[in-house]
Length: 293
Image (cartoon, rainbow, N blue to C red; front, side, top):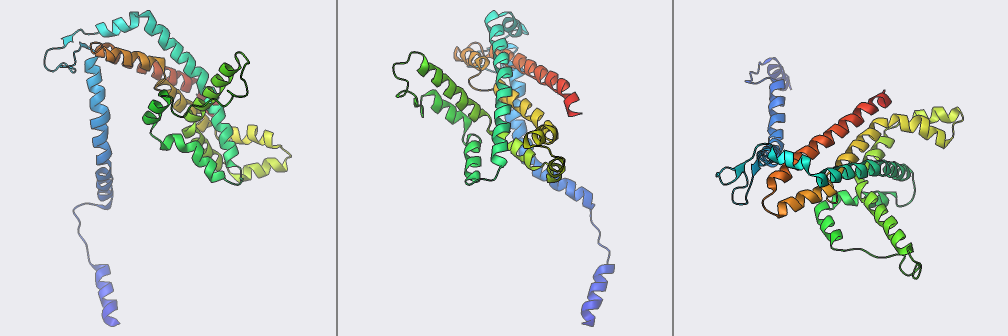
């Protein structure tokens, strides 16, 4: 027993020398864990971005896509000028922005509505949460190709509306829009669900004591408390709609690359479109700052 006590005292009073302090060791550990992400960012994001900027200044050919071999012709900002002067491209971009700005409020409102429902306690709540989050689990590109080929399409109202002119088309359009909204709102639903669960229960107890109804509690407690998440989801939905595969601007870029000689114009259009998208998002943030205060 005495030997054990002496050994503990000796260890307690002994001095340990280390080459690195505790803070430096922790910083080094964080750096080591961030190296895989950093390598992936450099290889799959940063280098492609730099190469896309280079392509936008060349009239490229497939054998010399990046202009390193001298086959592609350097044209400067000519690709940007052609894109800006093309009336079809300008019209498509404005239509794309209009569709996105009209689609985002619907997606955000639907996401909030579903999140409020999924927060309630009812049998099978976990199953419904999984169903609404399935689009995130599945590969978006694969499902896009499947839907494009007609997989999973069915006419629910074909037998009911037979012989009624225009009804099939109307219901088909409605069901298609509902399906696209549900498919595009999965992440927003998850964010809203987390936001709703973070609202303190004491706030609801206070307004309930004051005699507020559930509707008044939502407008005066829930919505102001989760307002930052509303803006976050609006920005996310904007970005998601701008880069969606069914976006007409994306279709123009794909058509340019299919010819094999307009990669430079497609790259120039992508950068102009990205800058316009950032400008829209910045304007939206500036207009919503007052609401956050």
